[in-house]
Length: 413
Image (tube, rainbow, N blue to C red; front, side, top):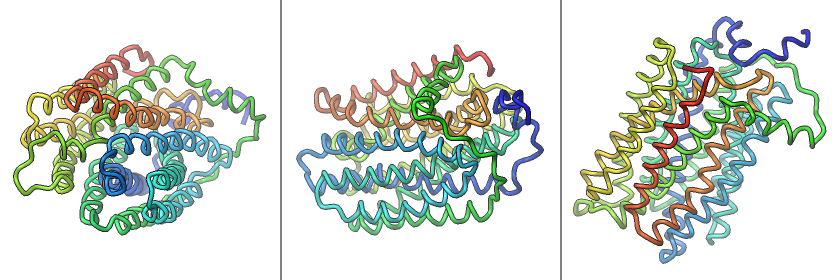
């Protein structure tokens, strides 16, 4: 291969391919479903319950601290693992290693008896899960032709609602025995990793030569100098920050802010709201992915879904009731499903080089993990100072700013 081949963009490189690996889209769906099941079940139910059990009086601040510190590990491990898989020329071994490691990490987390040890256990969980995530996220730009990115991203995006339902239901059933819940979720990821790597055979890409550490560090963030990638990064970061400021505290919001019907426990309420949101996510993920392919438009879908998310976040401010939370879940599910499907397709179209796809997707995943570092600290500070309603307003404002951020992108319509 001559030097000019190295300058191909991801889109140009993959467009020359024929079709995705046979059966790849269902396998992507399975792999992502398991991943989001663990994230939703642990972050939304098991971790808050475990922290509340250990120190009820300081649960809001402690959850912010634990989730924030663990998200630092997510930020570090995701792009580093992506760069390592780029260098190895393989994705499957990293997917399998991360999936099997999830079982050990969840077993460790469930056995912790102090808030500090819980933080350490969840850091280990974030580390192995982001090794898994970095590799499986890179499969779409590696193996899917440009014209099928929308439907492929929809297959990935469908893992969010189904995974959320599975994770929250498993966690809610095991809410009185959270160690069992942790193991069940870790086992789910391990099984998905085995299924994916057994079914999605890959051709080894040319391994990359190791560069000096200083050059690696410079190259790692150099992608942010790319105009379109930078704005995609900013838009994703703003919407994710707004989302996790609220969703990360949903259990406590239901405990302390929302007027629930008599006899309805907050953990049960989460298990009801999550499938409702999942239905909206499923509908909008499929419709958004297919329509964005047919219309060859990504930016309008991303912008509209971001604004819709802002509208959803304002509902519990004006109606802190069970009915208000039901409406919030429906509209937020519609918004987030469309956003995840179409924005993922958009991002794969602004990656500068095919040979650095996993590394650059890892950088983009900082826009997922970085806000999760800030969100717990920001949310706990807002709640501690002024209560829950301003938290919803703040999340809505961030979603609107995320919608505006896609406007300057030039290479994608």
